[in-house]
Length: 223
Image (cartoon, rainbow, N blue to C red; front, side, top):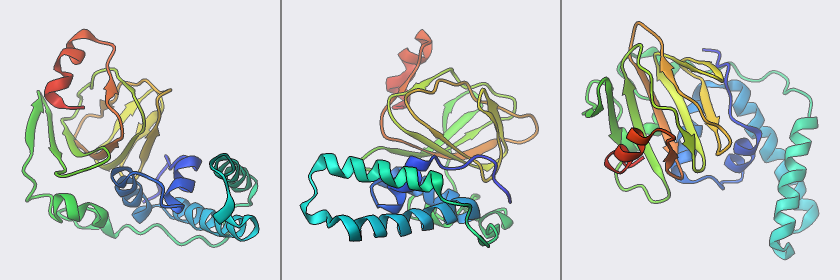
């Protein structure tokens, strides 16, 4: 598996620092299981972050200085040469047709066949992870050739494709790809023909729907 869409640099830094909401971190970890490129970037962020902390003595840093350090880390990641001899992507989470990726097991179990999907809309089913504290974590199964409502984001949306594919203005997203979106993005995913698209999504704020019908239904779907 060779993903074409990766984690944003700011997500990589926040993941390395342990600063992501648990729901977002779970989706990021799902992507990292199969993406050697992003695993190498996380390792580099951890290395750079360790060096910055050693030189800056963080116990006495004021909050504004933390922002400066984060910006410096992002810049150093941009300037760093590509990692040498990055490990090959691990395809194991997708080799067994019935096995969910390991980071999802605490929330959804290990088996696709055991999933208990709930109807959400025509051609759309979901499973919402219980007892989440800082956001929403859910599995989505969207039938082939379906258009989702146009929507924006009140905060972060991180979506990892597990099966099937969809396309939008940002390109086509297939198994292994991650869509790392923020409040500046408005899009309309359309699943490709053939097979249902199954993905896992984390949201740290409600979606924004420009269409009146989707806005009316939003409280029902709790998205």
